[in-house]
Amino acid sequence: MKNILFRDDQSLLGSNWYTLSKKLFIIPFILSFIGILAIYSLIGTEYPILLIFKHIIFSLISLIVLIFLSLIPKNDLRKTLNSMCILFILLLFLVPLFGYEIKGATRWISFNYFSIQPSELLKGPIVCMFSWLCYLYIKTNKLFYLIINFFIISLIIILLLFQPDIGTLLVYIAIFSLILILYFRNINLFILLGFLCVFFLLLAYLTFDHVAYRIDNFLDCNNSQVSKSLSAIKTGGVFGVGLGEGQLKYSIPESHNDFIFAILIEEFGVFFGLFVSFLYPIFFILVRKSISNPSNLFIINTIFCLCFLMCLQAFINIGSSICLIPPTGMTLPFISYGGSSMLSYAIIFGTVINFSKNEASSTNNS
Image 1: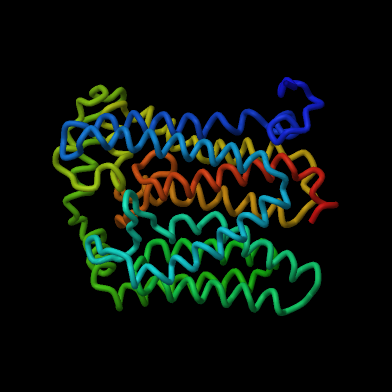
Image 2: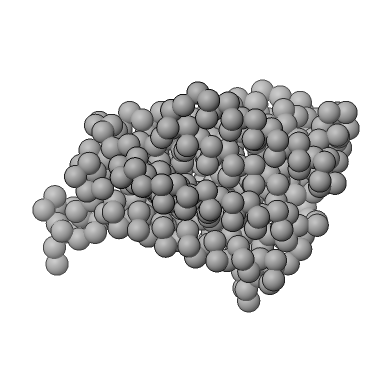
């Protein structure tokens, strides 16, 4: 049996392992471990011990997916992501028909033993598809590719409005706008997209009561969840009260998702919270440094957008915990509980690591 550690090995692992930037795996593994600690600290409150076992299983599956996606050939990965994109958009159509409602929103489809959130799983693949269609338009100057892009984002907007999921909708609009800005680099387009984002936010405020309620409470500083979150952060201080010793988890709902960052600071301290916060931009910096030949527009723009998406969602979760922005229900990537969220960011991490590895030779492949 051939030793896969030999550099002449032609297996999937052997032929790609030596071209990977190994340091890029460190941060997702650290985030995954921190997530396990955070979920473990919740056991004994409203959450049963089964929660930690499920979270560990989600983590292991996600890390396996991350590693697999980082190893396959770049063009195969792009085709796989496009297939995923089509599948998850089809599942979005099924959400209003077969989904179940939680707190006034229908975002999940339940199967016998698990449920999925298509809008979460779609994030990484849709960025790749948006970027690829813009790349084809730039290369061929065929308006058809641009029309498809606008058709897809319009379809996603309509489907998310049916749920409704305004926070995720605004993230999709922001990412789509960023892709257009990166490819066309037009200041007038930048201004127009900025006005459109403000328009969508204003429209959501005037149309959806729960959006208006959250924004009004934020502006009036009248949100009990955020107040408890800030109190927990103050209690944690510099070094925290210790693993499992925090009190926020006993008094605040959805602590395993929305306010997991506040729980981490209460139990491990402000310095640890800053450490977690900087892991996302540090990963972005490491990715940029690992790219030795930034020649392929599709690869560079896709990597930038995926890393921006990751940092944006982290900022939204952390910002809502410390009263910078209204609560949105966004998860903290690779730390918050949730199979769909962890799998979504496994796809994003794996794609970024893969594209970083393949970038130097991608000009001839795309």
